[in-house]
Image 1 (cartoon, rainbow, N blue to C red):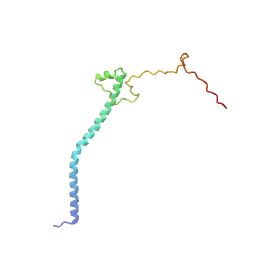
Image 2: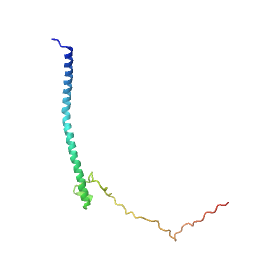
Image 3: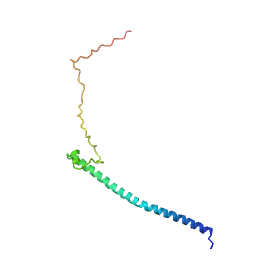
Image 4: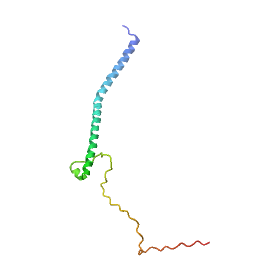
Length: 123
């Protein structure tokens, strides 16, 4: 039984392809769970993003309704990572009210150096 060189080349080529497919199949088997978890993670991240937006709005509404950060914290509410768009959150530090101070007129009783006129240049 003689085989032509042409059929031996096809057999070798098929053998290489079959071996490559077997190797890829084993690699695909271990990546399938990862692909499933990536899809689930993306879905859950989308749900979490939606909840974070709603939580931020509810937290801001509670503050606007008179609840303090400390009181909300006692209830287990933490400051949201996302707040609804709009005005920025007020600073927690108390700032002294700014009063516009205009310069006061000089006190006639205070000793100020007398202004002496500059001597005229001599020609």
